[in-house]
Image (tube, rainbow, N blue to C red; front, side, top):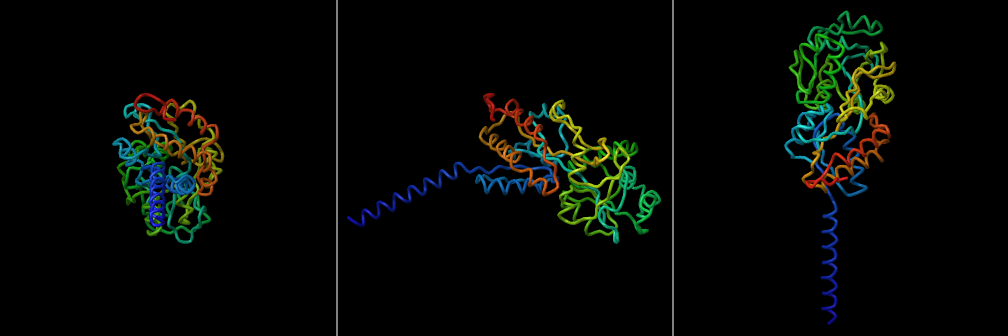
Amino acid sequence: MLFKTILKKFVLTLTWSAAALSMSSAYATDLTGAGATFPYPIYAKWADAYKKQTGNGLNYQSVGSGAGIKQIKSKTVDFGASDMPLKPEELDEAGLFQFPAIMGGLVPVVNLEGVAAGKLKLTGDILAGIYLGKITKWNAPEITALNADLKLPATDISVVHRSDGSGSTFLWTDYLSKVNAEFKSTVGASTAVKWPVGLGGKGNEGVAASVLNVKGSIGYVEYAYVKKNKMIYAQIKNKDGNFVEPGEDSFKAAAAGADWAKSPGYYVVLTNQSGKASWPITGASFILMYKQQADAAKGNEVLKFFEWAFKNGDAMAIELDYVPLPAAVTKLVQDSWKSQVKDASGKPVW
């Protein structure tokens, strides 16, 4: 009798344990996202903190904006991410909705012996000339005229660019197209362009690695990668004629004039903004979701993650030198979720 009682309790315990495990599995949700490498460091940090707090995981693939757009369009991920905002007509054609999640800056980085971070000065015209293959030496007159205090070598400039479809490339080429007519007419602005010169690196990670390994090289990466890898970066002359350094204040200054409320589909490009302190290659990173969610619960979980990030993630973003969206913008974004993201029956997911 005693043995039967013990056995019964043991079976009951196992039953409750299995039920608890089943309930835990039912409520734990793993989301999938793919796209821009620009925001990868902060998305990874947010995902880690979010999982610790909620038990829900996020698998974000840092594959580049072009691949992220393709993956969300082919419905292989719960959301895509791009540093190039899609135009309203493209969003409508694909049945997509986009919203900004974070802001930051793209920075020219170099591998020059004897040059300290932030000491080299460059202009948009010089950068365009380098990426057009017209300025080929580090001691070219255009560069030395701005940097009389630096001892620049008479070595070739090794150009590094992205090899994959990239929002970072869009921001870089959009800026160079705005400041240099020849670059605009021969290369243009896009996530993928036909580069006249240079070596390709995959992702911000690949470009950073190439610049760190190749003497005399120049490339462009998101500022978090500059800080993480302690890279040598350059100042850039902005639209108001001032040489500025990248950082939270100069990114904020560039973003200050953005009018998100009046921009259909949140289509805002922050390159070459006015303002004495503005960093000229600032950009936002965008999240792409379907307006009609096949899995309403998953859609809701994606929005829950970004609601949590907007509420709890600012300090983490600033620590990695990103710029959080202003509170008024996050409210605008969250209000739009109710009207833009719906289930198959037309009922709001949020």
